[in-house]
Amino acid sequence: MGMAAADAQFHVLAVDDSLLDRKLIERLLKTSSYQVTTVDSGSKALEFLGWHEDESCNSNEALASPKNHQEVDVNLVITDYCMPGMTGYDLLKKMKESSFLRNIPVVIMSSENVPSRINRCLEEGAEEFFLKPVRLSDVNKLRPHMMKAKC
Image 1 (cartoon, rainbow, N blue to C red):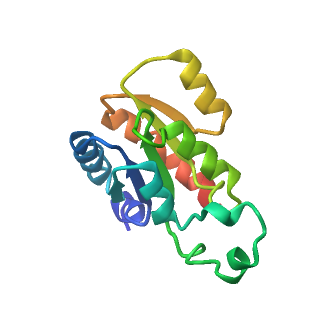
Image 2 (cartoon, rainbow, N blue to C red):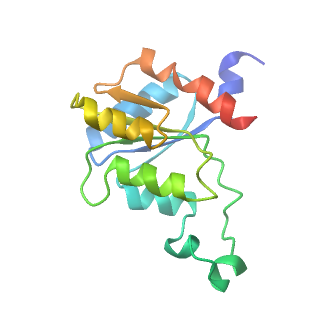
Image 3 (cartoon, rainbow, N blue to C red):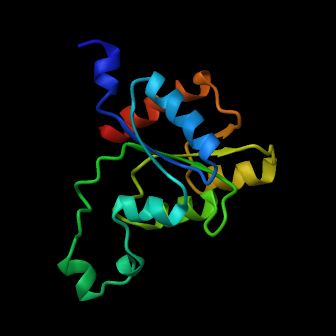
């Protein structure tokens, strides 16, 4: 089983409100043999991951329906920082506050190089901060984070 075959089991969720950027990151990830799902907003990403608004409080309903939580086989989320509605930072925070999602590595992308923003994302638990346009050399940095999370 070559490296490409091994990586096919890694599933990356890419979040970007720009169709062009989604296509680009999808192509880069597929070039690296990852399985890719793309969504165009933070809320759709959370929905795909099976996150629920009431998850943080222990309402009986949340306990009664661990709705497809464990089945989500996303190994990493890569998200644009600047999106309408929910920014990549907001998405990162929500994931890190969730007991179900906090172990999924998150990588943030941005077309703007704003050090304070980058630091805030890294402090909040992002694994990497990529400047757009994302390159193949950036995508190559994702694998170790997924390997680490799998153990």
